[in-house]
Length: 83
Image (cartoon, rainbow, N blue to C red; front, side, top):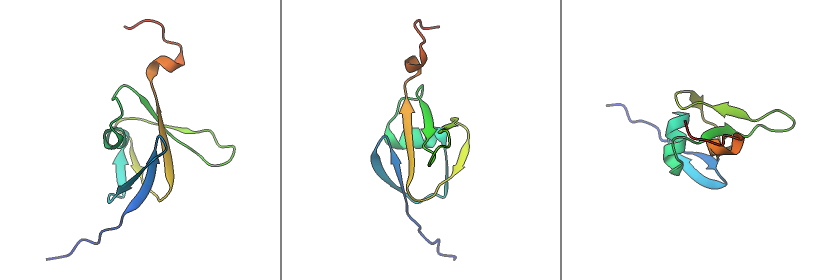
């Protein structure tokens, strides 16, 4: 039996620290980990002048230490009415 090597990765979601033992997670999994509403949009903070990256719910992302994510409610983008 092969023993799986645990490698914990530290990520930050809305300024809260999380330890994960996965090397990849989807946007939906990241939001679920932090208890973020499924309708919120998830972003990965990029370094320097690079624009932050939108992470879709089904998009798998390779995780690295010290990644920072944040979520924004859909109404922030000027939607006045519910469809």
